[in-house]
Length: 344
Image (spheres, rainbow, N blue to C red):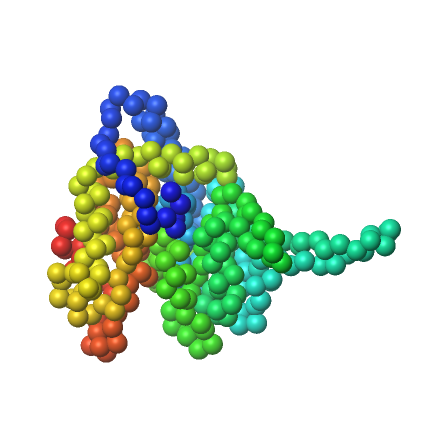
């Protein structure tokens, strides 16, 4: 089932089978690989342990990531480092109001051969990579944003009536500046829902900023090293689908997501303060992400604690506050905290 599927018969929840030694060995080996990858990223990106962990969870789950933070917090360097550590072809596109869909997807040009015969040739745009950094994605026009939407959802693009598949794996890591909103076009709900997580990148603490200062301004900077390949990542993503999920985790996911919908929630904070809540894709995202987080921690199956730990980055961009709630100073994280207390 792909990221866009919201229908079909659900598979029964299962528990860990201690006799499935092949799966256990594969998960154990993957846990060691991801630990090495996390250490390699941490040697280049100082602090930001939560950001690194949630980014790695997103990649393992096969999703896209929205990074929200002011400039200068290392978001661009994080993408470059991930490309090196995972052996992915990465590219960066600076989104601006005059950026056209063809600037990221590619375009057809008319060429004339020596024989005089003319034909169109497709020139691929920067989206044809494995790890795309969409820098300040909300500065592009809605037309350009929607062009990227198909690529994120279907892993292919359509130009002049022809479809072109994108490389595998394909991940979009987009950034937004939460402060400067002049000249921006807010992402529509349909496109926000395509991001597996929204990760907020905060200012570093004093000790981390000291490490950044000393580690990035000297004559030698720690280089990123390759730990995995693109094929390794795709095998890991396929392996994630075989991680067993217990019934208590499935129940926690459903209760968390469904209680965030104002029309059916029993929580006063949701009924009075939420304009629209998360859809079934949020449940799918949680199911995929909790598996990845468990494997990263060296566990054979996720727990309810994984659901609670990932509730904020998975739900915060899939819900919206009412104007009255915003006027009263309510923030989305407070509402999600109430949802977590309900299942915690």
